[in-house]
Length: 168
Image 1: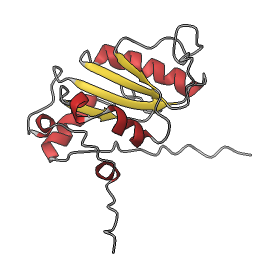
Image 2: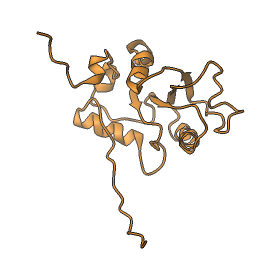
Image 3: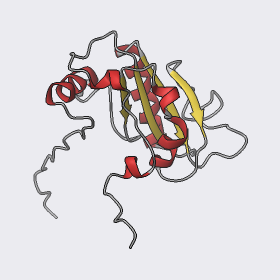
């Protein structure tokens, strides 16, 4: 009988995102080398405009941040996120633009290989609609909390804000 599949999608895909140095119980600091991983689509949209602005803010806030951006539906022209695109150019901390089709875990497996991530202290995979430099999110504090807890991976808490009902 075949062994049951685990519920650890990253492990099943052969992905080990955190180098051993990231697991040591030391507080995160502004000197930590951070690799961000995110995926998005090519077409100009409010989501991509917000992503470009979030990345600009994050680059300024975290000088050691480097980002690998996957545009999963880009064609060979690679015109996504360039100066001629309505979304505008990406900041210099975006050190790689990739075109890996499929789910974001496929991108992580292809791009975030142990050899490529070994020079980073923190690996931060985030969705394209997560604001990582505003909305009171502090990446270094999140890393501190993960290290203090001994967790190898974390998920930001999503808060529900209820709005008053609008009269019809």
